[in-house]
Each structure stands twice: as structure tokens, then as C-alpha cells.
Image 1 (cartoon, rainbow, N blue to C red):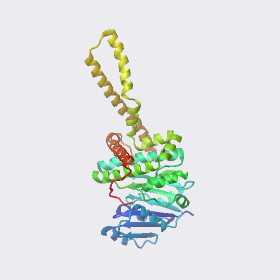
Image 2: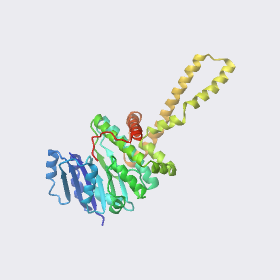
Image 3: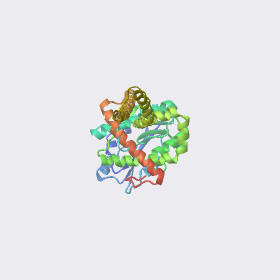
Image 4: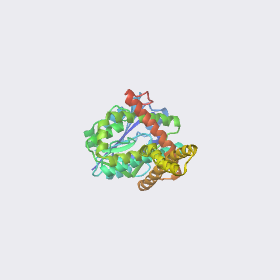
Length: 368
């Protein structure tokens, strides 16, 4: 019989998860829940003390900040189950029987990537909702087409004990989940994206905190990308019709850049030159209308690219979102696509360029 061990790293406060902890602890398939808490707040520590009557709950409290990687590895060492479920402290489990459903999803697979849904509170929360929707669609596509996944979102995923032992403990890098996921990818562990079970993720409440998170994610991605560049390139060459669509679904605004590159200004100008040479030869045409027409044509080209890329992206995202059980509103997705997604892409590309040149990660409000 399968038994599940849950490992949760917590820094300061994990109250969002505690609201659904009893749901997890009531499962017959549960071996134990291990909370590894660094520098808990007095309020959160008081809540933890009230939970000590649960025999399946193990709480480790560290008075100093040891970091997420240390917490994860320390937690794993205290587990006995043959399935390991990793949860971040900013997630909650909204449904009953979550652990038992997870055991069924694990059948025939080494790893299960669990559906993650941001609580869409406020404008930022709604934008993050579509952000996570994009990530989840990319994971679903990759798993469906290849049964493997080169990058794991560590907010919620499960792995069989033998698979974890094969890959090994988490490394001390900024994005330990990306690093661990790619090591599992190398070993060809079978991955399933489970959209029949879901965790809710607490949204970030301010743009400053969002920027700090994205800065960390961007440099973590850059570190991972540069370290594994040859293997990532080999994967792209081997599976271009999987990697490219999944990358675009994860970061939809990439399609704007790709289309702009493929349909470049030179093509537009050549088409115009053929038209103007024919027209001037036959009827004559002053210079000013030609110059104005060129500018209008280039502007129309950009407008067509934006329209075409958004139409295709929104249609694909809307269809898959319905299948995966996400809500999709076209006007909200339009705001996400043309503003939020572009801003996130620019942060990512800037960090990648910076890290590629310097091989250094700036000071982050984070400890691995």
C-alpha cells in the first residue's frame, strides 16, 4: 500500500497552508507531514503549538534562517513514505481526499506535477492567475507529448521514493526545483501533469514583492539555463515541435518577438518598393506620399503581428484552460498578454543577459 510523506519548508509564516492541514492529516494514505520552519513568527509558532496533538505531524523549528534547500533536505530525511509530496507554505488544499487522489494519479508514473491555481484577488492576483495558467499549460503539453518534464514547479509536486533516491537531494541553487526537475529529466523519469487535483496558491500582494520574486526567478532560471545549456539545446534540436510550443505557452509574449523577427521590415519594404516602382513608372508619384505610405505600412505590420499573435495565443489558451478546469476571460487575458507577460519576459531576458556576461547573481532576499 502506498504511503505519502508531505514535506513543507516554511520561512516565518505558513498560516495559509495551516487552514487546510487537517484535510491532509485525515488521509488514510498519509505517513506523516513534516514542517521545517525557519525563524517562525510568534503568532505562527503559537498556531503550530496548537497542532501538536496530531501524531502524524512532525514540526522542526530552526531559530535561524537555514534556507529553503536545507529545509527540504532536512524534511526528506525525517520521512518514511514511499511517495514524497512537496508543498510550499503559500499553498492550500481546497478539496477533500487530496492525498488519496494523489496516490491514484501516481500509478504508472515516477513524478506528478500538480495543478496550481493562483487565488485571483485584486489586479495583481488576476495577472498572476493567467501567469500560472500559462505555466501549467506548458507542463500539461510537455507531459502529454513526452511523458517527461525538464522543469518542475516546486510549489506542489510528488515523486515516488525510488525516483527521488535516483535523482538525489536538492542542490544549493536559487531555483532548486528547476535544477532537481532537470536532473529527473536526464534520468528519463516519467512525469504526469495532474489537473484533477489542485492546490491554491496565495497571490503576492504588492508590486515590489512581485518584482523581488521575479528577480529571483529570473536569475534562478538564468543560472539553470546557462548550467544546462548544451543539454537544453540538444533537447530543443531533438524535440523542436514540443519545446517551442511549450515555451510559447509558458511565456505567450515570446510569440510577438518571434513573429516580428520572421516578418521583418525588409520584407515589407521590398513589397512596397515593387508596388511604388510600378506606380511611379506608370503615373508618377510625389516623394511625400511614398514616405508616409512606408511608415503606415510598417505600423500596420506591427499591428497585424500583435493581432495575429494574440488571436492564436488566446484561442489556444482558452481551449486548453477549459480542459484543465481554469476560468478564462478574454479581456483579462488581453491585459495579461500585452502588459504583464511582456514585462515578465523583459525581466527574464535582462537577467539572462546579465548572468551570461557576469556569471554572478545579485543580492536576493532569499536563502537557498
